[in-house]
Length: 214
Image 1: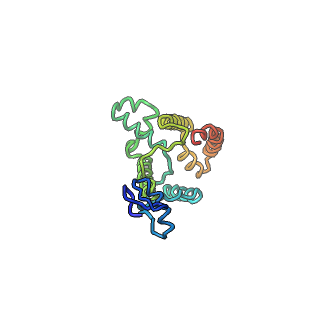
Image 2: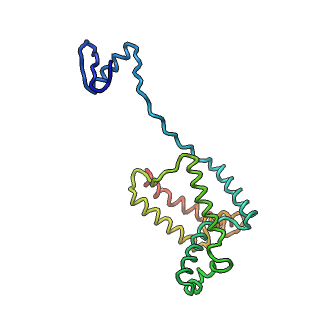
């Protein structure tokens, strides 16, 4: 065998053939003669690291919660950061309306909404998530979805689910970070009831949502 593209290759009967398709016929002949037919391999792309063990990650989250109490004197949270940011935007656009609104007014006291501890925490979450994805080899622009759902439907479902979570956080006066983690660590009865209701609701909705990932 002398080549690949359009070069002559000796067949099993000694005839000369040419063309890209003849490489496959020549491959068997070269193997029988003991020739090296290995093709150069491309450099393998690095595989992403496996996800963290959930028990190790949960323990780390508990230590972060403890550190937040020690360093900042506050627990963890998430939904309060968005509420504080919205209050700051409304106050910048119309200070009188923001001050007259009972929901926004509580975020305007003290140093103002832009000095809220939860805003700094969420900024750290974004930076930490970016660095974690970079270190694990998972940093890419993609829409995580199952084979049975399109991108538009996936984004619509994510928006609807996020909106429902936001409304639920307002009604429950906290989310899974502030109400469940922080309140649960403080042995608040309302926090433990919230966690049980969240788990029950998740198990009831899981069979429906699971279909989109099959």
